[in-house]
Amino acid sequence: MNLKYFTFVILLVCFLFSRGKCKQHIISTNSHCCHVQWDQEPKILEAKWLPNNQLSVLIQSPRYLTLQCPNSPMAVGHFTFDDHQGHSHRFSKHPNYVNGFNDDNVNCYLGHNYHIGDNPYNYIVSYDPNDTPAQGSIVTIALSIYYFCFHDGQTKCHSCDVKLDVDYP
Image 1 (spheres, rainbow, N blue to C red):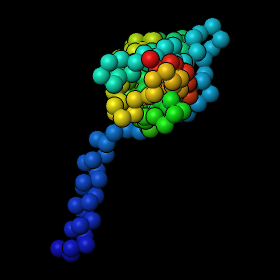
Image 2 (cartoon, rainbow, N blue to C red):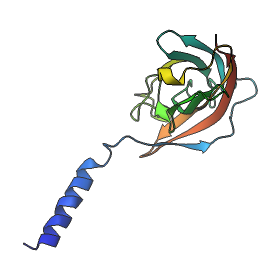
Image 3 (cartoon, one colour):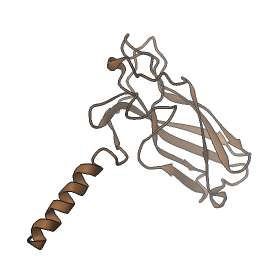
């Protein structure tokens, strides 16, 4: 058997068997912070500094963009804090599922396996102690909330970039 042909077949088989097993990248199809006027807007409600270099953020998304399904924060991305004095931390660059969601339970219109997460949702993350904000500083917490997602081979969501300034004790 020709070595080039054999190598091609092995690579093709590896590619075919690995499809769908890689972590899916979540994309935003609407980053305009969509919500209906009678519903709550996506935002950070509060942030608390916890012991052991942890940060708790309470986030919300609109509850209903359609009348079919309740909604909640499904992913968080582009999550950072910065004290504007040289201390900052990036928790995530790309969106990651939160609140119990994954590729298999975001499709509301399928109904049978749809997950209903908490709204508001309390997200707790850890950070490097070297990035601890300066005492008494005002820290900007910024992140993107992803909601009203569906998965059709790629996860697509509405999103909203939000910020909150909080005091560091």
